[in-house]
Length: 592
Image (cartoon, rainbow, N blue to C red; front, side):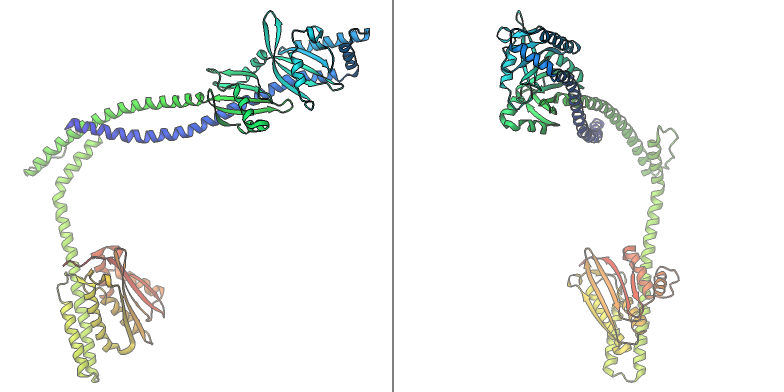
């Protein structure tokens, strides 16, 4: 038995601790995932912005100085003559030496610049920053010219990936930046060492599991650098985008900024920037592994807390089970002593905690006060029942006195016919039989209405045609159980204090309707009515010990004793217009 309750407590405590913990962890994961995604997007954006700044610096430094160089008319003319002729004048030779010195200074001041070429359209030679004039047919690097010839005529600049052969099977990957000359037809070609450029890119990557790509307008990957476990995208992804979306692939790529996409190497978060002057795009691809690692770290923490909770649960289950069975044994012994009639001693102050103090004192107080409480409740019930019966009996002589007084007044008039007197006496006889029956026995609504109609017939002899009474009673409530004489005091109050105080013919309406599980009983009249002060005074006398009247105060007390405060009388009245008194009682069917 003890083991069964122990495992049951383990299950309950584990559920109590695991459920909120799981809900909190789930909510935390959802919120944290949003934070992780937001941080990854910010990380990608920072990388793209950093690459943009550095790549712009690389290009601006080189191209700006070359623009200054090739915008000199004298230098351009010398360059054209030198590249188109095999012989040159002394002045051209001086200009060429100056040009070579300038190009070499640019290369030496920017370590990522591999070489710089100058070329005029149609020439058989080109000018290089490393060896000066080269013949195209004899040069080891001529692929740049093939790329240049493929550039659209309306394009002022272009970037393409190439390889430069340095001899002895030594190849250097470069980015060739083509820019057309300002004063003649031709171009400047700046060859940037890809390895050096990727070193610059590596310094800009702000997080792990991230790859940065430089992509040109044709979808070619110009440079690539990764941090973490390896490539997070794939180089062919951009070529596939161009193939899928055609000329508008760049706009589609920009629209993917800040979104998760699926590539051949997995899911990546893309951040996209662009260098519009050269139509180069910077793309940061952060692998979903970065997000998975964060989630896994949270899961590890959750599992650690789960193991700790399990240990705490087992300990608490054992402790509470042992304590409960110890307390049960003590309670059994105490109750056995109580059943034998032995006095129950107050527990000693050997309790270990407040749990024992509370339980021991509850047992002691219960056993010593249980009998007394039972007696008090029995006496209270007898008192309330006696008061209810007294109130019920009190209203009978009150009503009979008023009724006999009416008969006496009619006899004294000498105008009443024997038939009228006979009718009154017959009604009084029926009412006496009804009113003097067992006051504790309930009656139906239908019986109460029939009695009320006889009471109204007697009052007709007293008031004549001064009032008209009519009834609105739902048929479905006719068999509901009520106590006797619960409407007569209201009708009597309307006639004596409402209709009699008015100088014109009055109306009395008796209404009983079902409202949910309750009956709403209401008596309204078109009599004299009351002011606010008079109404407040009447309501205060309902619950007063010295009410000074029997009718409404008696009914108020009977309703409260029988059904509670929710069934107390409610009064609405306006001077000169009339009064309405209502109350609610439970709708209980009459027991057969």
